[in-house]
Image 1 (cartoon, helix red, strand yellow):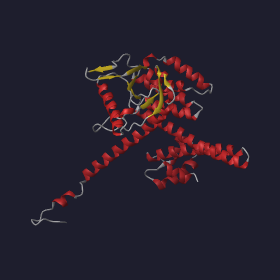
Image 2 (cartoon, helix red, strand yellow; image 1 turned 135 degrees about the vertical axis):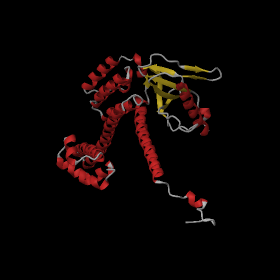
Image 3 (cartoon, one colour; image 1 turned 90 degrees about the vertical axis):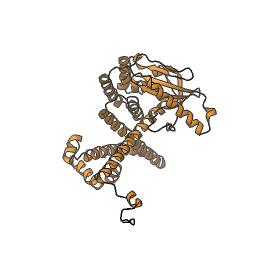
Image 4 (tube, one colour; image 1 turned 90 degrees about the horizontal axis):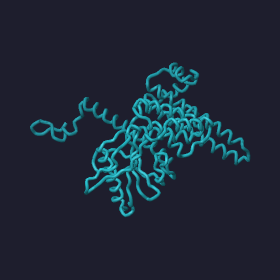
Length: 359
């Protein structure tokens, strides 16, 4: 240890002194919280992206804005004006070349105009940084209100500067009629058009009160699960996650995320298997390859889902017998996965476990 002439520790030594156990715990806790936020934001970003892509090429007629047509989804990583900025989830390019900020509110407050002004300033700042201010012709703020709000000011005018919004009130949507119409079509195994998909996504927001919204979210998700088309199911679940983010019960949101991830993974694996089988069939001049690819894709998707479920339960400290009983799967299968997963404890990374087990 370096000492000064008087025997005391030098400034350099004090700076590199090992943090106390308490400080280490605080730092570790802070990193965990930050990592958790990043994961939550990543999940939300993916859901918002899927929802946004579903809107491209279509109007906002389901929201009562048939004159507004979206042509592209724009990046939402806007430059910050100050620390701890609120995240912007939806930014679109419209048919008339306007940039549209779309936000969702379950109540009205004049303080919201401060948020919209902040969003607008950050959009303008991005164009300024990129040297493209001349391309920014119009900037619109569209606010979609849940059924809890029947009226709201659309302008905050300070004479020298004014913030104007375009308001949509979902209280005007006939919830019962829309639900029955969509349920009838889904139960017949028919595909939904884009307007109907959007109606299904926002349906929980068309009822008043937190408790009724939770009930509507549950009914809507159960109806979405009946969609035979995997792409439509994935879009609707992502849309529900996006649109109900401010009102949904946190535990149930996690359940929807799990269902959505399973649908997404199942679709990707199914498509990979199907395409590989089709190529094999074309090379051999026969159709059997497609069938094998389809069957393999379905089987892999089911195995992947099972491994993910087992790993999540292992992280909670559950035994193989309990997991088998809860998932209603053969104990031999669960024990086989658990034996493979032990190598990856305590994190039980699903990707590594699946690759090692599904050989």
